[in-house]
Length: 291
Image (tube, rainbow, N blue to C red; front, side):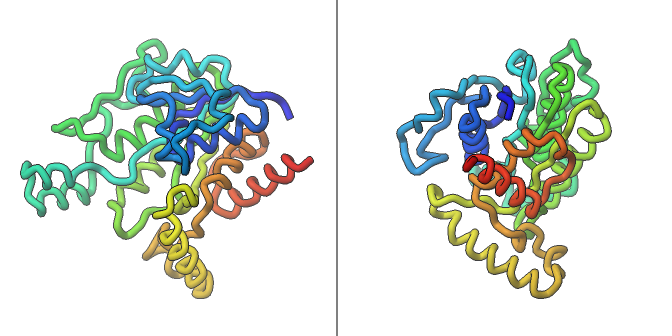
C-alpha cells in the first residue's frame, strides 16, 4: 500500500471529515479545504474536542467557488475529493422574511430550472482560474451552482494539475420531498466530468442516507429507511421510481468514508459506485486494516 496525497473539498463536513480520518489511518498526506478551515467538531462528531488524528490533517481555508484560492493546493495530489454540496436551497428564507409569498417561495424551490454559474465552468480556460458567480438574481446558491458547477470546476482544476483521480460524492437517488433538480444536477455533474475530462479516473460515489450515532436525529431516519428498503426488496424494487433514496439502504458515514479511500487505493475502481459496491469496498478496507 503506497502512501498517497489527497485533497478533500469539504473535509470539515459530516462525511468529508471521516474521509480525512480514514486516509490518515493509512498514513496518507491529507489536505482539506473549506471556507471555514478546520471543522466545528461538535457538528460532525459527538465531542467538541478535536480528535487526535485531526492534527495530521492540513486544514486550509479556501472558497470552492473561487478556484484561485485552492488551485495551488491540488499540486502533486494523487486524488481530489468533492465532498460538499447542498441538500436544500434557501428559498424558504424569502418566505420567512416576507420578501416572497409562500406560493412564490415553493414555486421557486420546485421550479424546473435555475441558473448555476454565470459562465460555463469548462470555458474558464486553464490560465483563467475564474470564479463561479451565482447566476440567480439574488445570488442564491442553487443546486446547479453547488452540486454541479463547483464539482465540474474542481475536476477541471484537478485535471489541469495532472491529478490522476477525482472522487465526486453524489447520491443514490432523489427523494419525494426534494426538488428533482437535486439529483439531476448531480447526474449532470457526473456526465460532464466523465465526457469532458477523460484524463481523470473519475469515481462517482452514490450512497443513500448517511447516519451516525453522533447525530442522533439520523438514527430514526435510518431505521425508517432500512424498513423501506426491506419492503422495496420484497416487491422487487418497484418502489424505487416513486420513493427514490427513501427506500435505498441507509449507510453508516464511516463505512462510506472507508469505501471512498479504498476506491482511491484500488486503481481498478472507476465510474459509478452504488450501495453494494460501497459496502464491498468498505469490507476490503477493513480486512486490509486487520492484516
